[in-house]
Length: 282
Image 1 (cartoon, rainbow, N blue to C red):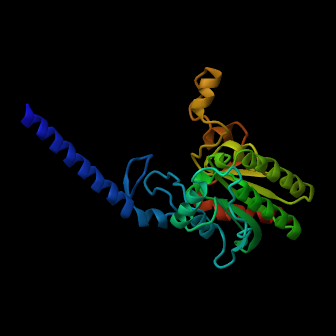
Image 2 (image 1 turned 30 degrees about the horizontal axis):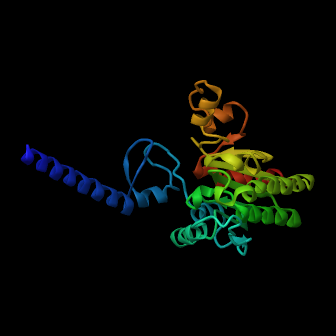
Image 3 (image 1 turned 60 degrees about the horizontal axis):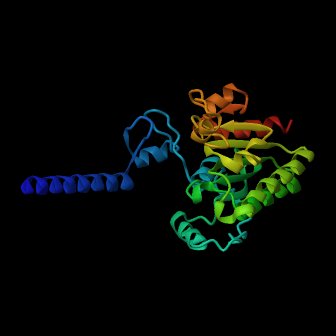
């Protein structure tokens, strides 16, 4: 029995080592699609705009990669980069976490805003990044987006916001929640000025972001199979005591029920945005 026990321990150790090596391989040159379960060469996925070449699954992407896909080469000029993250609640370890994420992601906050050209059409864009605290919205995120909206009003340029977020940032408490009102108020002024606002919902767009600027676009686009909603499906089911419909809170379901205007694949996004901007210039 003792020998059998030793064998089990050794077998378990070998399995862990094997799994560890497989994980290291995936981290390095390969990525697994969580939809079709295929193991894909990472460079091939990147060349395909971070879309699975096998099943069409749209992987989550960084703000840098998104800007590179949307903005014409060399035209992006950042807005609001001077806005720093603060710690209003003196939340234990919060600023250390921010510093660690900055080093890891090479960006300063969960949103990057700027002016650029899209197929030679000038626009103001804000691009959220799920790699930075799941794109959560704190004071710096709200301030940067508000500054971008104000710049769109000043220059009378169309505004585009790519949304991806887990919602309000709990480490900043009520200050985070106030960004919902702040960004919504700024968009109200943009609307009064008669300036186009396009909201692009990507996976996932949830919480306070959905309840504020994400849902206020004159035109609302979404990527395929994106999770979009306020609370998660499990929370809703527990609250109302009912089973939700199949595909609830996915972009296809929301298109069918009138919440969004169009689902656009990543390969068509730049062209679609440029066409919309041109149409509204007429």
